[in-house]
Image (cartoon, rainbow, N blue to C red; front, side, top):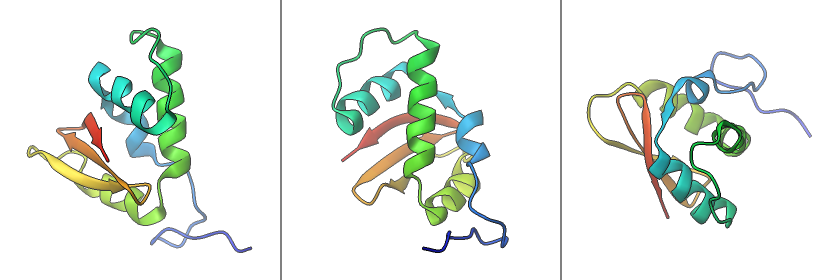
Length: 100
């Protein structure tokens, strides 16, 4: 199976944008509940937030990564497709919530 490429022709890589975005506690809680199907234990835990970043990065399709790169710094609230069935709500480089 061939590895997909991103538009610049390089091999698929981690989305650096997602790693630099601010993750609200609300986003972390909703991600755990809606995507991972788990209860949130400690919202202030850096480990939980890192786990969410890693999981998002694994599930983002190349096109979704590109859209996130383009719209993450928008001053307006933007709904971006995620994992075929969800929407990431972002604004001003911040992950706000996730919808089904």
